[in-house]
Image 1 (cartoon, rainbow, N blue to C red):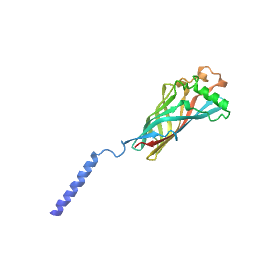
Image 2: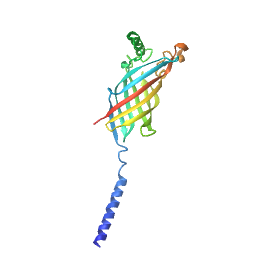
Image 3: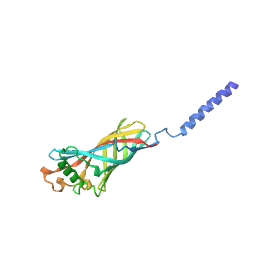
Image 4: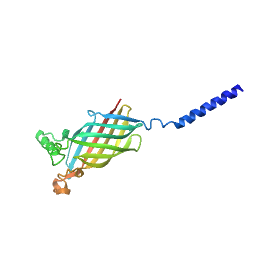
Length: 207
């Protein structure tokens, strides 16, 4: 009789534990973690091309930003780019380099005196595999905001998160019309409307 009581008590204990487990939220899947952009390790490389095929490229510094994970997956974020940090890396002649950078910063292009920052907001991240994902969000340049979507490779190492991808945007949607055939540029002098940003984000976990 004593053994039967002990058996029933053990079974009741197991049943209660199982019932309690069903009431608990799914482990870690809804836990939010915040990561701060490491602006010394993060880099953005821009490339612009003429319709004839020649191109220029350089860098833009990321001044600040943060990323959020849900569980172990990247789910949101904001990246702020310093447009006054824009450089050209393919022209070796100092004067020619300075002329191009100055032109890119003036009113014809990005007007960095009036619009010193650009912002990339990550709104939705859809994973296509362990690390491959598609990010949808908004890109703001010269106070003009348009939706963007691009593919990335994401690695979450626990305390460090990296996201590498290539974003291509139509500059004319941001009032950057210089050299566009849509606005009167001659075909032999035309600059492609699309600009690419190769983005390498590195962020460290807060706390």
